[in-house]
Image 1 (spheres, rainbow, N blue to C red):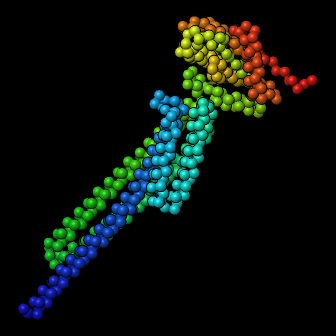
Image 2 (cartoon, rainbow, N blue to C red):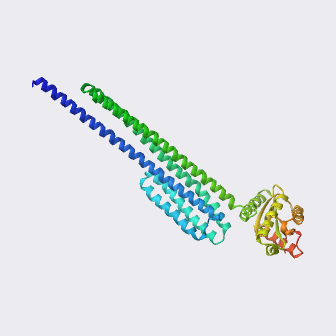
Image 3 (spheres, rainbow, N blue to C red):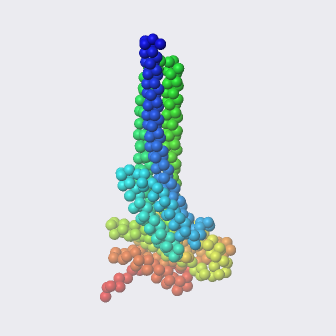
Length: 417
């Protein structure tokens, strides 16, 4: 074989081998880069999944506390501690899987979440103990004033973590796009060289480039869709939690039988009116109402009939008072009415209107009932508890005088000689 021919064959062989080597290097460099991007994206998606699991656990715990306070028919007091500990264990397990994957800044946010969760868990245990011991109002108060204000920042931190993961995924996608662009450039250069050697190599290179570009585009679309779905899921969970919290707050201040305010809510109203009285000297008064011989109603007609009497009485009182006044079920068959911006002489007409309206109403199976009312208006230097005590004394004076009457308590300063 002639030297030029051998040289041409050797040169052609070397070019082919170089092309094969360059193609091999290019393939592995782009594949390695793609694998790295895929691992980064998968890592961020796993973090988002774990954050969503934490949100779901917190959602389940809030529903559990709601079920306990509302005493749903499916709620079992004997299983309450078991369920509470199960939710706590699930939170700890998910937390332990998530923390090693977080960046330093994300761990600071997770630390704030942990502190809020520990506070909420301790408060939830306190609420459970109070509820199981029969202190429902105190449990509602702790839930309303302590647990709910801590839930909002906890959700905010979780949303901040999810947003951070979304930004990281977007950065990974930008890197993937940049790598794809570099890969396409390399493949174009190899294609030009390959044309000199063989049209077949050129076609293979172009086909490979298009296939790689399509795969990257499909992965990009898939990841964008998954991020959107996970973000929407987290927003829906946050919305449900806020709605549940609002419902819990409403139930914590409402008497479940009559639909009126409960004792906790009335105490808040009395404190507000007392503060207004101290600042602006706007007097307010209260009327304590008690059903006469209510025990006889329960004994003679049953507790269901007694509950119907309480419900209808609540409707009568609510319709008889002024729009600026408030009424609450104080306890048992006792109701308390707070009359705002009123003088002592105006209390008796309101009380008598209610008393006469009740006495003339038909309570179905029970027929007629009567009530006794004790009235008292606030004076300077008197506390809320003293005001309630005066109205209570007036109420029992009305009962001792024969019932079915209203009595106004006149303030007497016992400290004067």
